Every structure is written in structure tokens, then in C-alpha cells.
Amino acid sequence: MLVVYVVIWGSAVLLGISAVWGLVWAIRTGQFHGLREGAESIFDDDEPVGTPTDFFPGAAPSARAASGNNVRTMEAKWQR
Amino acid sequence: MATLAVPNKPEALESQELLTRVQTDRSCRQTVLIYYTSAVFWLLLGSVLAILASLKMHIPGFLADWEWLTFGRVRPAHLNSMIYGWAVMAAIGTLLWLQARMGRVRLPLPLLLPVSGLVWNVGVAYGMIAILIGYSSSTEWLEFPVPVLGFFGFCLVLIIYATLVMMMRRKVHHTYVSQWYIYGGVLWFPFLYVSALILTQAPHINGTVRAIANWWFAHNVLGLWLTPIGLASAYYFIPKVTGRPVHSYHLSLLGFWTLALFYNWAGTHHLVGGPIPAWVITVGIVGSMMMFIPVTTVAINHHMTMLGQFHHLRTSPTLRFVVFGAMSYTLVSFHGSLAALRSFSEVAHFTHHTIAHSHLGVYCFFTMMMFGAMYYIFPRILRREWSSAPLIKVHFWTTAIGSIVYVVGLGWAGWVQGSMMNNPDIPFMDVVKYTIPWLESRSVAGTLMSVGHFVFAYLVWRMLRGDGADQQGPTLLTTARSLRKQRERKARARERAREVA
Image (tube, rainbow over the protein chains, first blue to last red):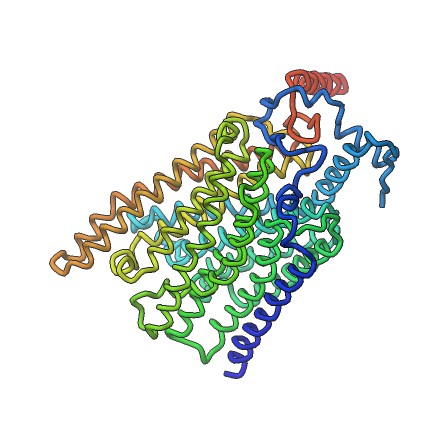
């Protein structure tokens, strides 16, 4: 029975503490400020807001393909 | 470790960000590939077992001469293959990639994480064999024998560690809403699994108390593990694919914190009408009702983000699956909250209606979401196109139509079945006979879904073999010219091979 009490109460206390800690951390480090920038944090200059990024094979607009951002040359640069 | 060598010019900024993205995607390659390909394998095995179990419901004598293929073993084998093989492995692959992407960091533990994928497979295989030869623990959703915890625990510790390391090393200060969901899921699931295992296997816990722990766990696997990873994917892929930020970021954060507060309470609604204290069930119902808040925020957000963007569904395979999953999430959650009410459960509980509901959740929502994520992630870690657009469409339509037929047919049949069973004048055998055509329709729907899975597995196999065009840009940007070049290159290679021969 002791195991059961330890599991139930121990985990409730641990989870509670971790949740409160998470919330305090988030408020202290300003995670709830600048929400507009936050929403845009998954975009970058190379894939900016307004650029769709997924297409059926062969169906993508060809304009960007010619822009010179070739992954192979990127990788060659990286390895050099 | 290779260092960045980018010329220090203003115009290099764009390539710098592209370079980071290529690097993070590349760092995920081995780990995500192992998790994803294993997930697809368990998906196929789970589909075969599902068809067997479904057929047995209306052809009772089917393959009943082998004890390891009897319904009581095939059905839990299907469930565990789908949950611990397919869903969890797909979720881990997706969450690791998303973490690396959003934090703009490389995936840590380049050796141990791929090994963890193999260890997870050993755990699932061990559990599956145990179920099929008759050593199931007979607790639903936890049928794997206890030693499997050793395999899963090893992997989960590594995944928690990798998550925390990526959180610490992240280059983006802001914690995106998907990251919140992932942190939540990663920290909750191991705790859930371990405590549920202890609470259901400890010898002095039995009968109804075990059932409470059991359903608290089973409900939370969906709510505190699969849902966070599914929603993290939706919150990343819908904006990313359409190029439009989330409609209301405030609401999305409110949605996460309310989910964290309320979901955990909802599990006991599975026991409405059962022989447990009424207050335990009432708590579950209240928790389910409170879920209206997070679900509404997610529904508003996904719908409003997609508003005016629906034309992308024609051109993006990822978005098709993800939007199908997001719509199913809204549906399954509202339905689940209402189904928790006593008046509703009076009819629908302990009927096929529940099976339809759980497939709406784990299949129409989560599985479709993972298909969408895989369509986005595979090409980026392998830098290769998918090889065939028509086959992707076949995959989408077979799984979409199959799952709709499954859920609508069985949901309706379950409701009628429940109403008939509540009427004492109707003999039980009449109720059984009524459900048979619907069980047959379930077999047809399940077969259709499985056809889709095999098509998807074929696409993945061709992806691994390198049949698709090499990627020409940072994203999927094949042009007619690049395809022609690729074909020419392959023709030359064949010619060379012939000359050598």
C-alpha cells in the first residue's frame, strides 16, 4: 500500500511543483510578452511570412527554384 | 564538428538562416528515419491485425483454430501495435524534429537517440509476441508485460534529456506554442506510463480500483501525450505551410494552459454507469466539460488561420492531412465532452459508438496529423522529393474516405445498438443481428484504410531508395527542368551499368 500512496501523492506533488515552476519561469523570462513576434518566430528571412512551403512533387512554382538558394551548394559551403 | 563558413556580407543573412535550417534537418536524419520507418512497419502490422479482428466480429469462425489468432489476442495486439508501435514512434520522430527546427539547434545525442529507436522496437516486438502467445497483462492499453517498461523507460529518459538539452541550447528565445505542447507531452507521458503500470500491476490493487487507474491512463495517453504532439504539429505546420502566422496567439497559449489544467481529470468518464463511487465519475464529467475551453481555442485558431487559405489544400499534401486532422480534433473533442454526460452515456456506453469515437481520435485526428508531418519531414531530412503525386492522393482519399465510413457507420450503429439494448422488449440476439451489416461495413472501411497505409509504405520505401527527384531548393521546389535532368542522369547511370555488364 505504501508504494501506492507514494506514487499517487508523490507524483501529484511533483507535477504540481513542476507546473508552478514552469509558469513562474515563463512569466519571469517574458514568454508572454511580444506575442506577435512569438507567432512569427517559426518564420525566417528565407521562408518569410506569406511564402507557402509545401507542394506536391513537381507542382511547385518554379520562380523560387531559380533564386539560387540551392541546398547542395549550401551544404558544400558548410563542409568546406 | 563542421563549422559554419559563411561570407560575412549583409546578403549572406538569408543563406545563414537557410544553412541553419539545412543543418538542423540534417542532424535529425538518422534518429527520425529510424523512428519513422519503424512506425510505418508497425502501422502495417497493426492494419493487418485490425482487419483480422474486424472480420472475426462478423465471421466468428475465421482463423479461430489457432489460439494465437483468436479475437482476444488479435485485438489487443492491434491496439498495442498501433499505439506503442505506430503512434508513439511517429510522435517521437515528429517531436524531435520539431524541437530542433523551432529551437534552431541540432539534435543532441547523435548516437544514443538512433539506438533508442532500435531499443523501442525491441520493446514493442517483445510485448507483441507476449500478447500473441498469451502473456498479455489483460489491462486495456497496458497489455504489454511489465519488463517492457525497461525498454521504454530507457528511451523515454533519453528523449526527456534531449528535449531539455534542446530547450537549453535553443537559439530562439521565445517558446513557441508548439514547444509548450511538446514540453508538456514529453514530461507527462513517462510519468503517466510508470504510475499507471504500478497502479494497475500492484497485487493489492484490483477490481474497480484498477479500472479507475486503467482508464485514467488510457484517456491520458490520448489527452496528455498524443494530443499535445498532434496539436504541436498542427500549430507548426498550418502556419508554416500556408505562410500565415497563427490567427490568435493569445488564444493558443490559453489553450495549452487550460488543457494542462483540465485534461488529466477527464479519464473516469469512461466508467459512467460502472460500479465506482459516483463522485469519481462526476469529477471526470466536470473535467470533460471544462475541456470545451481549450478545444474551442484550438478550433477557432485553426479555422481562422485557414480562412482564405483553403486553396493551399489543392497544392500541399502536408496541409491536406493536417487540416483533416485538425477538423477531426475539434469534432472528436466536442463529441467526447458530450459523450461524457450521463444522459448520453446511458445509450452510447459499452456499444460500438465508443469504438467509433476512439478511432475518430487516434485515427482521424492523430494518425492523419502524423501522415501530414511525415509528408513534410521526410523530404527535408533526406533532401529528396516524394516520387509520386498521384499515389499521395490515393493515400489521402483511401484513408479519408475509409475513416469517415468507419466512424460514421459504427457511430450510428452503436447509437442504435445502445437504444435497442435499453429496451427490455427487444431480445439480445436481435441487437446482435442488427449490428452485423455495420460490422461488415467496418471491415470494408478498414480494408480501404489499410490500402492507403500500404500505398504510403510504398511511397516511404521509394523515398528511402531515392526514387524521387533531388530537392532543388530549400523546400520542395521541383521544376520540370530538374525532373528532366534527373531522368537523364538515371538513364546515363543505367547505360553505364549495361556497358559494365
